[in-house]
Image (cartoon, rainbow, N blue to C red; front, side, top):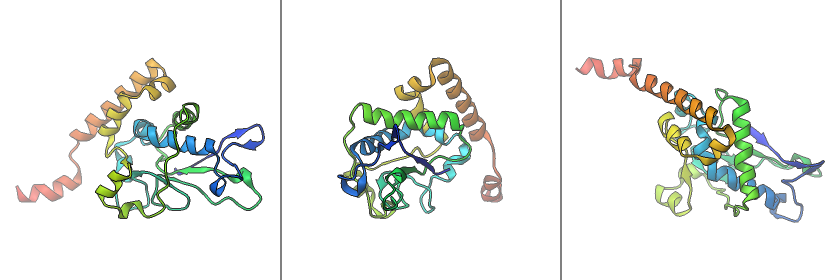
Amino acid sequence: MHTHLSLFQGTENAFYDESKDRGLSDTCHSFIAGLLRHIPEITLVLNQWANSYKRLVPGIEAPLYISWAHKNRSDLIRIPTIRKGRPSDTRIELRSPDPACNPYLAFACMLAAGMKGIEEGYPPVPPVDENVFELSAAEREARGIGILPADLNEAIKEAENSELLRDVFGEALMEKFISNKKMDWERYRAHVSNFELTTYLPIL
């Protein structure tokens, strides 16, 4: 569920500034920084099923590493091309959400993360224009490129400690949401799949 986001002040696109590199405003850079900083803790909302994390793995188009770029499709956030004379087109594309999410909760979290970046003046994050999957682990670490939660359990742990998520949801919804996701994980980890039966049972 690749999601395109833009922010307007009246009729003006707040993400556009013709005086800036490639037309991206300081507001846009702070919004991107907010998403990148808080994406681990809101991933549970954007990717709610255990199966969601089988998509967020190396080797397919879905993002895995926490980075952004102007055109590169290996990054978590991509900047679509702005058509000449159409500043209202300026937007960012967040590529991690999937259709299993609750869109009301997902959009609330995406907006809250980006707006926190703006309100608190998060500094710009340099783009990663080369293929991030081809960077070594040491190169990614040196450049401060993080990684999304690897499974539903990791996402739950990130979300549990999130002040941002608690502010968006409120205490009652937060506790219920986390509790439901923990039940999902416990059921999933106790399930014996066909993969396990066909891989391990014959050698026992």
